[in-house]
Length: 386
Image 1 (cartoon, rainbow, N blue to C red):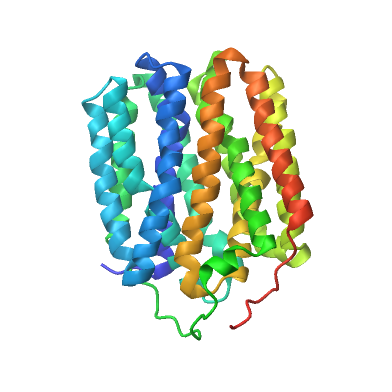
Image 2: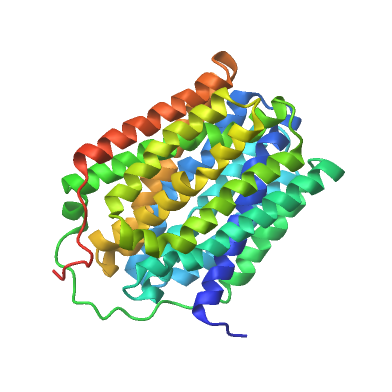
């Protein structure tokens, strides 16, 4: 059965981020239920970021060299499903570490490749990216809400079956994806390494590193933070969902934002709001209205920042480099930055406490803002042909 390419890509984003919606908020609680310490949880969850640092560059290089992105997306979906299946058999740290490493290595391969496929299908209209990507946000909301209600009713062991089913959905949609149309752009002569060393690109990637580090405490310990403050899993899921609802609205209106404001301005505002958001989460956990406000800011700190970052890379780099560039972006930001933020959060959660741990995240966001403000200029609206 064949579906229009936009709908196949939208369905892939739906299942991919639905898995994140079930996994990211609740797997830390599952690990805690197994008796794992905050430091062990930080190490295990950081493997997702470690593999994002290593694996996407390998897979992106291989995809650019072979010209077969979809085959790698399918292989990664199948093997990440196998890796996750080991969680049904292991409860000790060593076994969980092995399963997480295998699952994360293959699971991290696919997103940069599908991002490149999506941009190739859009053919010079990257402002429409948000309309496809928002289905990932819809999947996240449905998964995080339904999983929270189900786990409140049945207990944390059900999480493994929920995640396994969503990984199977990723594989099923990956089998329906088609390769991007052949590129008709002139050959790019500028080496990618030289392009990456441009000061504005370096400043942007460094800011992305610190922005992802700022999110480390949130992605690793937000649910534990809320449950420890007395909130139920259903409300935890609702708060996660609220953030992604805000993200969806940003994706829908991103074309208008790009017409009204410069990319640089959108990114600077997004990072500044991240400072405010993480201070609120850390110091105002007893105030539900302020937590609601903090989650609404997710539309800026992730939605606008990520969509703006993808558009920035699309303007700076030619189509022949997009798979590797998206992989490098993911490795530096979600990989290295997320790993640093998560590991430090695991170290400080019990020694300094949640409030100071989230303050550390806000500090990372402030560093990212300074790097972007001082070193990054606005790219041209269309990429010059080299």
